[in-house]
Length: 205
Image 1 (cartoon, rainbow, N blue to C red):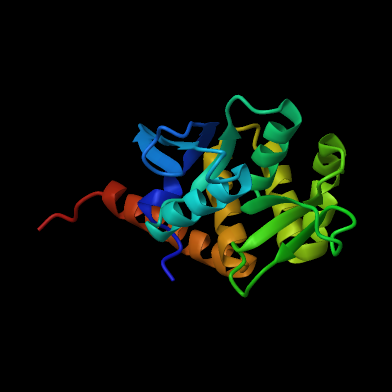
Image 2: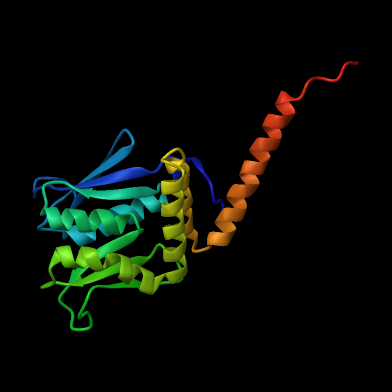
């Protein structure tokens, strides 16, 4: 697996808004600079479906979505989608009898295939409050490492926030914190060695 690539270093946001029946497809996607904008026809695709399909399409093109931002939707729903997307979670509001409380479930061995299931009659602000605990139950090791990364951001005073955000995404995607740290440290060592070599005075012939 290639842990670091340009797409991961420059992750994009996905903005979701309602379209209408006149658009050619159920979900219309376009790029606007460092963000993607998707308009969905609610008669042909639910919000949940539009978000899942769009993220899956972009993922297949090796594009990392750093955040899903809903436009023109309920504020509590918007906040929930934003927080869940930062943990690489899809959101599904379900009426099924198997889901009695907000729960994160990993659907396959791929750690990015995880969904935050919420009963349809559940208060969305409470579901948002429960998200960290639900995520920690499903992926405890990753949750612990994300807390460490957040603490490192505070300790550094914001000086290396972007680099630490990239590390957090890598940990979420790979489910291998130690492997990510080893790779990042190896790259930092290579950079330091290269700079030392460049700074060394040339030896006289």
